[in-house]
Amino acid sequence: MTTRVLRSVHSGDGFHWVGDGFYVTQLLPGSPSLQELADPFLLMDYHPVKEYSPTQRARGVGPHPHRGFETVTLAFEGAIAHHDSTGAGGVIYPGDCQWMTAAGGILHKEYHEAEWAKRGGRFHMMQLWVNLPGRHKMDEPGYQALTAESMGKVKLPGGGTVTLIAGELDGERGPAHTFTPIEVWDIQLAADETADLTVTDGHTVMVFVIDGSLTTESGTVGHEQLGIFDREGDTVRLTAPETGARAILLGGQPIGENVIFYGPFAMNTEAEIIQAVRDFNAGLFGTLA
Ligand code: MN
Image 1 (cartoon, rainbow, N blue to C red):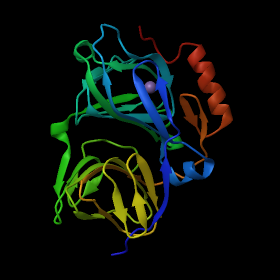
Image 2 (cartoon, protein in one colour):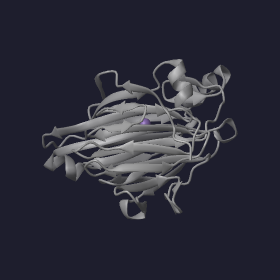
Image 3 (cartoon, rainbow, N blue to C red):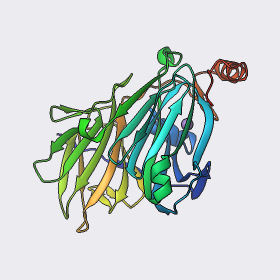
């Protein structure tokens, strides 16, 4: 067993609105060196707990395109609705995950689910953009609605639980189909519990703390901070404080390809970005009212 060393800890860049429904802090992409460390994750927007007053309005983001990656939305509180140009759509509630493969191109809209919005309440979520390798960037788009009941569950020997959305731990698997090996785990630890999590040597491993904090032998990851581990080692050891802790672990095999990021597109080359803009302007991403 080789325990991973915590390499760096990152905070968000302050808060901004995405449309009028998502009040987020951005942890990724950040600097070019951070982008390399986070590979295969391109972007991470975190929406902390926030109270919304009741409204008849559709709060959110209207139709917009994506190409070259997947958008993964985790709902912790509230309800998020989605519709896209393939005709797919759905609502995710606490514990659910919306795993949308934009790949060759999709239009979608994302907003607070209407019935939930009429009541208002606490809203809490996270969105990740997961890169696709060049050979899959132009695949057909897809949509996976992953419900809380379908998630893998692991009870840790030292106490605590891990809910698996993607990836494998201790013989259990998350339901997400991924193009490259990806781990998205929701880790919950009670007071002073320590977890030894088996990870794949060479994979990127990061933890984002949404409750409490997490201590490692090489430093602490505070509330709403992203800790990134060195890629060597097969175990991540995390200890919760007396308040307990909850964190999202993001891991995966680095894709290691050039990334050109332009707005809602992430491709390997500038020529592919120019093509994406042309294709979008030519209406090739489909239609969505
Ligand atoms: Mn989007």
